[in-house]
Length: 232
Image (cartoon, rainbow, N blue to C red; front, side):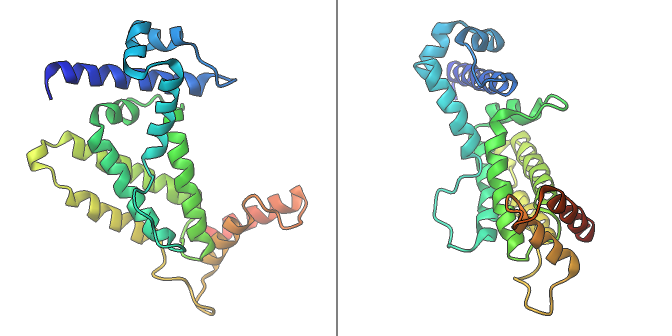
């Protein structure tokens, strides 16, 4: 990549990150072109050069957030574990394809302030883990599994980005992916009589998520508390 192209890419990344940060901080989801440009350290014509309009920039912010875990190929229906592994690979590929933006996004986090650009991807991951839990295959709650997967997935992507490209060990991601995911899952959908109490509790928690099954708010809260203790 030439120096000119590298500089252009860095400017585009700063605009994307600035827009994402401002969207996250905005109570009504609105941000101005001026605020975006000031945070990114550019003039308005630069934004229009890269994205055509403010809406073009905001659309790109959404695309970047969602594309981290999206599958490019169909996953067999009813096999969320295969989708989970492919999602890991897609996330690492996203980082390697957009290293400058990825480092800005994940390498310069602000304590206690989750980034709006990562929220959509992490919500997709959590929904996938809920499906796996409902099959009785998750050893921990979907939220805990998501935290572990994101930490490992981001860590290996940053590690690979830091390696010189000719010496980059892509197998590191595969090995870590399998170690992390295999540790979180049971070997296969549990058969009747083989279900453990923690696994059953996790599955019921996932099934109750968003559907209290006719329970009052207080009853649902109490049941979830008991299930979390059993799952732990």
